[in-house]
Image (cartoon, rainbow, N blue to C red):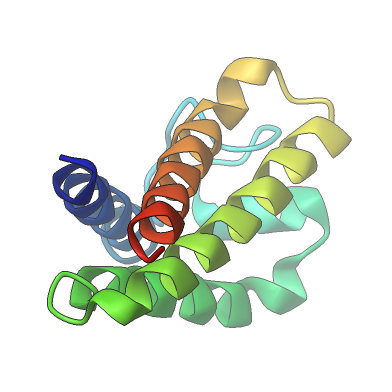
Length: 126
């Protein structure tokens, strides 16, 4: 049962990250940091605009690896742990600019999901 949950969450997290970065990056959402209207503006709010491309490549790569882990199980812990770290930083950035807690909700959901994936992989590998 834990393996099934891990796989379902892997699909959810992987597709969500890809959706945010590749299909919704130019769109306004109520979860953007500060008064940003798109993802690049959000990175400017955080003072991270110089790292936008690098962070995007890392997040999308981890999401793709997480989806590939459906076929290559050994990748799942690495990918989910990487995404969890990225989400911790995202939550910190929201807090550091004084955003309402609701703005960090998507990152919080992805963090918890990624931690569940990583935990289930550690438990099942014993």
